[in-house]
Amino acid sequence: MELCSFLTLDSFITDPLSHEFMRKALLMSSLVAAVCGFLSSYLTLKGWALMGDAVSHSVMPGVVVAYALGLPFSLGAFIFGVGSVALIGFIKQKSRVKEDTVIGLVFTGFFALGIVLVSKIKSNIDLHSILFGSPLGISLSDVKQTIFISLLVVILLSIFRKDLMLYCFDPRHAKTVGINVLFLHYLLLTCLSLAAVVGLQSVGIILVVAMLITPGATAYLLTDKFDNMTIISVFSAIISSLLGIYASFWFDLETGGSIVLAQTFIFLFAFLFAPRYGIFKLKKLFAGYKR
Amino acid sequence: METINYQNFRIEAENICVDYNGKVALYDANLRLKPGQICGLVGMNGAGKTTFFNALTGFVNISKGKIRINGESVRSAQKDQTIAYVPQNEGIDSQFPINVWDVVMMGRYGSMNIFRCPRESDVQAVKDAIERVDLTDHLSTPIGNLSGGQRKRTFLARAIAQRASILLLDEPFSGVDIRTEKLISELFIQFKNEGKTILLSTHDMIHVREFCDLVLLINKTVVAYGETSEVFTPENITTTFGGISPDFLFGPES
Image (cartoon, rainbow over all chains, first blue to last red; front, side, top):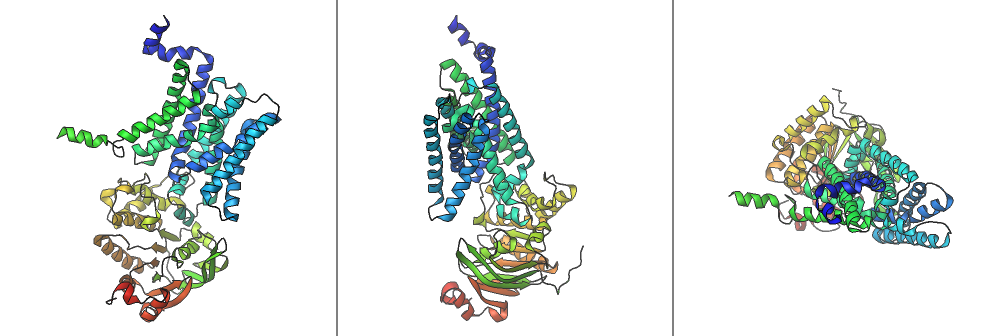
């Protein structure tokens, strides 16, 4: 009986939907994926992968402190995310240490602080769900926060879509024609921190950087138009989330890990078979058959 | 069309200094250019050419001195779209997913509304600019698929679309084909006649003699400045390039 229902595609898709927690997880993860995917095309083109890693790890102590104080965890996370970037900038400017070293040491420091705080602050913080995400156990207040932050990021990115693209492409020209480059820099950083905050609910702090770079990298291999890149990035992120959650439901896998793994597989597929930039350029293969 | 007063200075830089975290990149540099003048900026790598450009566009702040563009501050020059910067080919990410049309449209961003929605006039300006650099067949070509010369022309078109009265060109002739070189030199003559002011950096001494009315030789500061025929002497060039003779650098015929 169990095996039978498992074998039909229809029930493979619909069965999980009969559970309230699965519906919620699928919906929230898709939303989070869309936001991270949107931002992802900017981060990959700007070369901010390491920055994404830094910010997402640095939010750890913020989450812990916020839980301990009964504040919205996104607030704490946001403060520490932006704080880490400010600290990176400060140390870089005031010392001779190279930037990637500064980034590495600041975010590991913040992350370590978070872990130490968890062990010291007596509360019901679930370390596992912070580190690895818990889309299946997301609470109602978290849902509200996530929707609010997601909408905020999407609106900001939509308004400044073209300016941010110009900022990534040619900041010097942006400055020359009177566009506020400093504002765009901090806008992108703010969106990065906010996206990291919502992303960590899906896949956890350790893997959230994947949500922020992998969809963009996949899309970058598939198109030469920025708008298409954003669309592909968003959709590949959403599909990965759905695949990951279904896989975790049917095969009893860690959810966050499954989502990121799905993203990685989609990237590998693009890496191998992308029409123009893949290893086995599909376009050329087909052209060869025609002859 | 506003009338151009050829007696007023377009660019006035007085004793400007730029330093990056205490490291001096440029000091006590002066420059004055009028409408219709083409000035060559010559110096070694690291002599402060790009820094000079950055100071004029406001991309870096000057630590001392004064810059006036059309008699006003750099900030208001930015707002008025007065200065266009044409980058070196190496200065941009050629793999960025963007096509010729969209790059040239970026020249209009500064005068659009916050959402950067192109108006009819913007579309026309972009069309005209692309036509002037002879890239009409490549409107939707990604910049990664262009040759070095075509890419250079794309950014030149962006400057034209911007309708700037001052053009700053970083190595406009490096890595371009003969056709592009010819087209750029024709455009220079047109720009001059339109009363635009051009400041270009170059390594090529022949180009300086060919196009530039004035030349600014720099090595962290101004070594010499004036009419090309007077200032562009082997002695001055040798000083600019740190004692290496121009014959050795550019061959005996230059």
